[in-house]
Image (cartoon, rainbow, N blue to C red):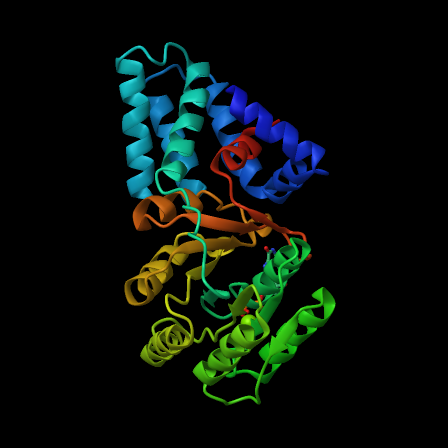
Length: 319
Ligand SMILES: Nc1nc2c(ncn2[C@@H]2O[C@H](COP(=O)(O)OP(=O)(O)O)[C@@H](O)[C@H]2O)c(=O)[nH]1
Ligand SMILES: [Mg+2]
């Protein structure tokens, strides 16, 4: 652990258990993945084919995916060949460094300052956690002193609008909505327009998530993007794809579809608390070259955390 990392973890702890919440949120992945690595490294097999095979299995069970698993295994073997890794215990540290490297290669850039409201578009399939994440984000930005407007762009299901309204009420932000069945781009347009008029700092637009293979949905989302861009130049400033970690590798093909059509800027990985397949996060980052911006580790308002590669890997392996 280097100095900077120590510092992060320490600050996290001072901030009232940010790190320990991350740790407990990752419980299932921790026990299958970190626990599995631990068993292999402390098991009877010495460095060699048997040990490598055991490690491969652990990586695959955590849904790391074959390309990422293969890369990690090659790097570990290289580490042994160049004597960077001299004993089994060295494998763990090297593995941690590799995992951080995967995540940091595509780390998120700070958004340049925005003229007028910053517009965030949330996309993803039904049930991935869009509306919940918007509620959590709204609360977070409000606490930072921002004036936030949320837009009920999932007009496909009446319950979706009510759900967002409930979050808005609870967090004390404005919700712009129209009756169910309205063109979602009209709702988005209204919300961004009203943010300009009121000088609001941020607009977060919810969207529908009927099956991603449905071409209409992609067209609908593209239209929302276009319409928003007509109100505020450069908007949406951020398009965030929300993915459910509990579905593991299936979220990669989903992510590809959305990214190909809509050019995703960042990922929100939800339900890490209910998943033992958290390893998928490494594979998606590496395959898509899109950074994870936030992770969801529970259903409560403060169960959304900005993503930090070092803290994430540290929390996965922390005893
Ligand atoms: N355990 C857990 N549940 C979550 C998380 N994020 C969302 N959910 C739940 O997932 C379900 C679907 O979320 P919702 O926001 O309605 O998804 P949407 O259809 O994409 O808008 C709800 O029951 C949420 O409470 C998370 O990080 N952890
Ligand atoms: Mg929703």
